[in-house]
Image (tube, rainbow, N blue to C red; front, side, top):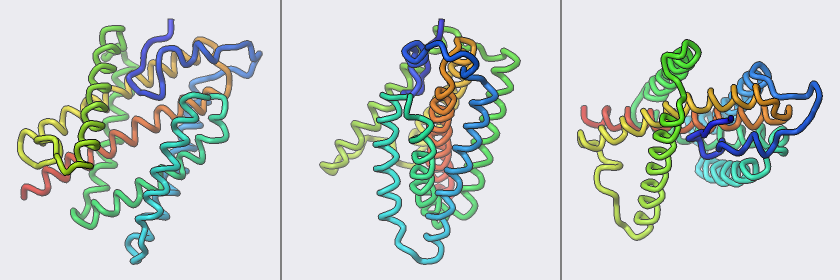
Length: 246
């Protein structure tokens, strides 16, 4: 039985809906890893464009907004129609990279070295959780999955509420400030984002073992990329709150 993933792009029915007889053209863990490296490289390429543009004096705001909108639209399409993943996921990675590069450059201009710190912490957390998952120190039990899924959904609702209230000039207490309570909230969000990686590892492994079609490798890489981007952004936010107290 394929389990539940807290990642909104990877739910417990995704692979089951896509399963079919494709002979040797079945999803593999190795193939998904290769696709994940490709999408990460494309994301870094897009990020470099907006990052370098920011520090050479260009107005990268339109690119950042465009990248965010395009990425959001493509993410929705891929989530509802995984079969288009081989075509749209690479485009999504570039668009998301353009947005992420501009965002990172903005943080870097405020706190020198923060983007490298966030990137290294994200990589470290990824490797640590991958090792913990492989050695079964952390097991993706059904209760574990349900807890992470509920926490992720709760965070998404809070962010949505914050966005809606922000349109009317109202801010959610502690969510964005650098008080110790605000820092604690950011730390909890970072932990939840990190735990989603465990569910993604389990979900990809389950899909490969379940004989999902080959194109689902791109979809698995897409879901993993979504989680890594979220974790990186939350790392940036947490570090910025800590640095702003100096």
